[in-house]
Structure formats: C-alpha cells, structure tokens
Amino acid sequence: MKTLSSVLLTVVAVVHASATQAQEAPTSFLYPLAVTSTSDGTVYVADRQLPGIWKISDGEASIYFQASKKFRTPLNAVRCLAIDHEGKLLAGDSATRDVYRFDDEAKPQPLTSGHIGIPMAIAVAGDGTIYTADLELHRIWKMPAAGSKEPEEYAVINSPRGLALEDDGVLWVLSTSSKNGQIQKVTGAGRIEQFIKGHPFKLPHNIVRTNDGSIFVTDNYGHGVWKVTADGTKEKWIEGKPLDRPVGLCAHGENLLIADPHIRTIFSLAPDKSLTVFSGPQKQP
Image (cartoon, rainbow, N blue to C red):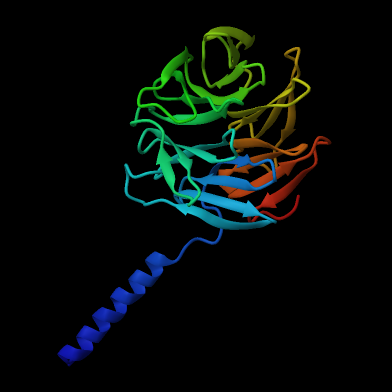
C-alpha cells in the first residue's frame, strides 16, 4: 500500500513531466503556410500549427515567435507574411482579424482594431502603404504604414488569396473563384482590370511577379507552380513530386521559395526549374 508521501511524490513527478513536455519547443516545421524573405536573405516562415513564425538564417531554422494555442490570441492563426518598407516583418492573423508588425524586440504590434476578417496576403508599397487581401470579406484593404483602426476599402474582389505590387502602384490580385478571372490587376483608385480570365488554376494560393513581368502561382490542388508570361500565356512550370500541396511563395534572390505544408518543407525553385530543399525534412529530389 502506497504511503501519502509516495503518492505526493508521484503526483509531483507527473506534474513536472507534463510541464517540461509543454515547454518543449518543436524542432522542425509543423504546417508551414507562408514564406517571405528580406533583402539580406533572412527567411521567415508562418507555421499554422506551431502556431507562430520561424526564422531561417545561414541555413538554420529557429523559432522567431511562438504564439499561444489559445484562440483569439495574437498570431494563433497566422496565415501570411511580408516585409515592409523598413525591413520589418508583417504578419496577418485570422484569430484576431488583424495585421501585426514586429518591433525591434520581436514582439507583434497590431495595426488595426481587428478590422480584417481573414488576411491571406500582404503587399507593401515603397512609401510603406500596406495592402491586405481579406478572404472572408472579399476585400483588398489599404492602410498607411503606421496602421489604421479602419483601413480603407481599396477593391472588392471575390476570394482574394495572393497579392503582388509593382513599383508604379499596380496591384496584382490572385483569386480562387472570382467571376472576373483568377488574376486581376488593380490600378489607380481601385480600378479593376481582368488579366487571366476563367479558372485555369485548381486551388491557387500565392503569387509572385518577377522583373520581366512574369507571374508565378502556387496551385495547391494542382500539385505545382504555374508561370504566366507578361502577355498572359499560361504554363504549368513544375508539377508533382517532390512537391505535394504547395501554398506559400516568395522571391529569394533569383529563385523562388515554396512552402509545402503537407510535407513540412520549404523548397527553392531556380530559373532552370531545378528544385532543392531549402529547409525541412524532405530528402533532396
């Protein structure tokens, strides 16, 4: 028969073990949804199941910010990332319906008062103006660099998922199911023009526009990446293994980085279509 002291010791040991386990941080990606890169090559990855953000520097991944698992807390449901005009990290979070900027202490500071439904993509102009694609409210919101309690409605587009911004202010919008086509451009004061009519992409998620006017699109259900030339010609650029369900996309020097949450890997795609593992558990293709 156990004594009271032995029971208490057992309870203490179990509590200690549980607390230790709870404090253990993941050592690899759990569900990387979005990726962005700074001018010096530092890469940030939004991990929906961490939940939080990883930082990759000199090939090593470490946790930059770990959010609470409690819903409606900052970055509990982080979905998109961007780098602002001053090199600061921005993150969109559907749990708190907001966009955050990380300060010098790596703490997220909200930029609105919970005005954005599901922020799926962020683009930043040279003057710091921030555009956010809102999947829930079917809007593109616009706000100054400092943020706004009530961002301006810039454009109404059904199911916006990806954004790319040109230096002249033209905003390219990737949509899942817009009646005006899956790629549109917004010029001037919110004027919308069709670019890719119809729905050639199965489930598009993110968009990058390169200096030659080409557009690259991750297609989750299509298991690959599309290339669309400046004249609108579409081509399945890469498809199939080692990719599974690509989602995140960003420019990284001359290459593209692709976040594939189903296999917990960030790939690097070179201009010659060669694909290598940038970070994650997958073996080299």
